[in-house]
Image (cartoon, rainbow, N blue to C red; front, side, top):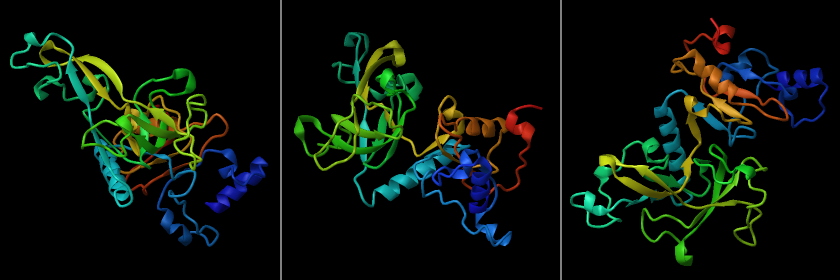
Length: 296
């Protein structure tokens, strides 16, 4: 890969060593660990734990793969930091007399809450987060500052109600979650410093409220953080996103040609085309120009 980088840099006439592959898109496919068998000049397979891929979103073909990757990252984080779980707070908007057995607006039976997050105004019943967790914003907050659905960043801190030092009990929502977004243009006005020693410029993300129709036609109000852990994403979920870099798994489970196109198309840059690579070697799958372009 270093040889390819050198030749493309010479070809494009770029002296900046920080611009990989001369600013061109490079799709590296195959078993990188065996590159040394091809030529003695290629001995350094791409390391996805280093920039620009260390914080890059992993694009995977199956939701089960996304969940597994997320669980593994939380397991790694649990060795050094506390993992928090936050429960959505539901209340009933309509008069409770219309619902048998319910005596308080704050008492919402599980049977009235839709199971799918999409039916709950996009807010999850439970959210698991931690300091250093990669997250994605699930709601438009301040569009003119780039605080929009799909913005990604890393959690650098929490603040708790009534000045508490930590979560009072499992499930309680924080007052704010401080997120340092990957795009430095996001939230230029809203940035804060969480302590005098921190050089971070995170943005405070607060719980949001939304109304939706629950089961039995009742109107519910939900309060929850508009954040979800996002080290990896299901390929079909990244349509419309613009990623500076991505690690794409082109494994045999890539069951549709269009999935490859969607994954590649999501990775763009306003300044230069980013490098792309596959997370795993491809086995038993054939990629052609027609399948990448979506044509016959």
